[in-house]
Image (cartoon, rainbow over all chains, first blue to last red; front, side):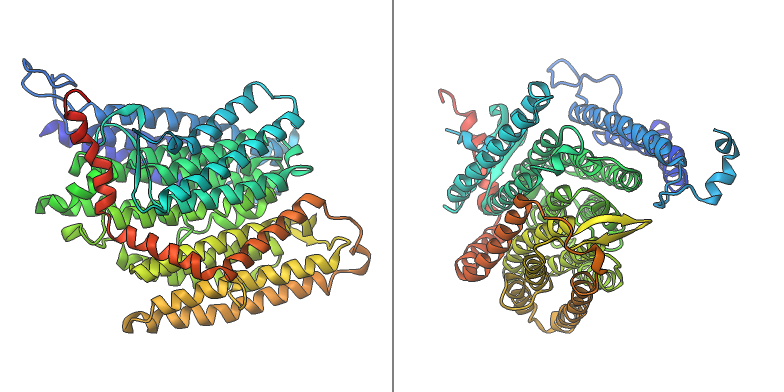
Length: 125
Length: 505
């Protein structure tokens, strides 16, 4: 019971934090939020084969049962893909910050007044 | 004996892309030759597979020769073969149009293009839900690269939105896949179709959650309202050949909706039969209406084309939402012509949009003004759905499929009234470009040859779809009937399991 509760709470908390951060205005929190969401989904995928302890991931006559190995394979795939995507979006945010001078998510190409006010140091560069 | 040709639409672009990146990094001429040849080869294979699939028996390819519910399968049925053919046809047009100017603006255009084809072809062929996710990721990663091809601040900003929304979509896809696997214990689509009707009552709500989450993902891909906001800035700020290729990406979403909600959650799915249907029709109508509002409100040709693509996705979703054989057949016919016409419009918008003043784009008419005005006129007719081109026939078929008493009151006014407003939107934009351009900006540059020819060829294809609407519709009807009787698909995928258990094979 306690393990299920802990895992479900953890997934819920990660998802909530991820969703909150995705709705932020700057690219950095959005990227972090996406990472949080992917952690949540990885834990969720891991749990979808049901939680068991001390069982081999293979059908064996001497073991009492088995852990479903497929979710673990799926999680590995998902981790690899998310890792690549996160790297891409980090580089993209950096490029877009360097080219436009603002890490706003908004679509205007000019750094607007809000962005300038939040980063007064940029004026000196 | 498995038919090895089934893996070719995935293998050819995979090999080509690797070759382009590793061996031909610095030779643009070599890249062009190899890329065009590989695209032509894919189209030829797609034609062959189409002929194979029109035999009516779904063909199955077991990857690594693993038996069906355990290994990943590729399945070629009529629907998959039609989508492969459409992708191949569009790819040839786009790769030819990109030669010359557009593929020089950044590196690796052709490699990214081939990776995109790998993802598209794989998504159409796969018979496994998690594998569908993987191919979605492949085509998305490639599309990020293509979308950003050439760079520029506007493109980077829009690209961030596009990537973020698709990363969220991928996460939701994984949640949906996880939920479905947790309940059914399988991800093979044919196996799911067998297991879903047998799910015990306490787990049905969980499975329905997974099914609707999956629909959300496909709705993001197919730009259904309210998940369509990413499309106009993305397609509007990318390079024209990339946007033209992306015209089929929204159809990948529509294809996935058709595939999953006829095969897995179709009429035989017991309590979960038609779990998506109540959502599709209203979503389609709202998408069509908002797309049309966008067409009326758009200030530049590219915005207009993006919003008309959303409107056409709305029409397509309405046809799918009818969930009848006639509806699916009409949807497929409409999808064929709308993809090609939208792609041609994106290329045309690229040729006409040569400059930028501040945030608003400036259209400049090339020297061959008459020719381009004619192109615009024909494509507007095709996209809006006026006679005699295929868009009209497609809309007529959808109206005809929606003749049931309840549907008529909702579908007919939506399609007919939005068509009127779209005519107004297209006419206004056409007048602004071709009649109201400032004189000094006019007729200064010659349009490049190859894209012009490609646009002409695409218009001819749409015209051919109208002329041969009868035979094409026969084929679409056969496809729709095959979709609504998935038993043969399921049997084709799962039968070899029994054969594999026999000794001495």
